[in-house]
Structure formats: C-alpha cells, structure tokens
Length: 127
Image 1: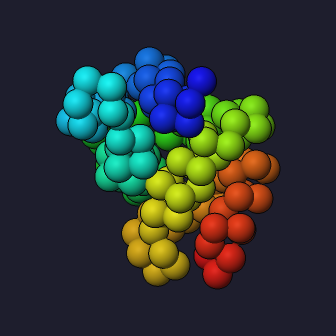
Image 2 (image 1 turned 135 degrees about the vertical axis):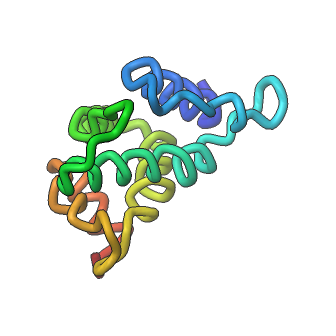
C-alpha cells in the first residue's frame, strides 16, 4: 500500500467511526484517486475537534456532538500502529495545527494521550 492509499484509508476509517467528521470529505478529493489527507486534516478535522472540545469545556450546547475524546483516543491508537504516513498526517496536519497558547481551545493539548503527547512535543516543542 502506498503512503497516499494509507492516508486515505486512515481518513475513511476515521469518518466511519466519527461520521460528523465526514460531512465534507468529498471536497478533499483531487480527482477520483487523489485524496488530500493533509488538507482534510488541517482544515476540516482539526477545526471540528477543537470546536467540539471548546464547546464541551464551555458548556455550549451544539446540535451534533462530536466525541472529541473518542477521536483523540482513535488518533492515539493509530499512532501506536507505527504507520509512517498516518503519523505524518497526525503530526503535521493535526497536532501542529492545534491552537497556540493563549488561543481558545489550546487546553486540548493537555488532553492528549501518551503517543499524541509525545508527538506533539516533537512537532510543537514550545506548546
């Protein structure tokens, strides 16, 4: 399996487990076989997870509740699998894109499990 195929399978597995993340997934295909995983995670997935986290901690009711803790657990388990392509997507297009210190939602970095926290320290050593 190529890196691009692994990235697409990873994204499809994610949206199968967390359907609210897949509402716009079709927009991230650049042709029938070219899935833009990094763009999908950087724009869609990260924004949705941080929004769900912020709504949860602020007690804001939202129409469709995304299980942000479940998503973080899923990402952590996928990191443990050791797939290099999946790790690159998670590191550069999710963890690196998380809010900076002082921005709303930055507290999510304190919710990262072992593998996610370890990789976060690598991609964003200054938080």
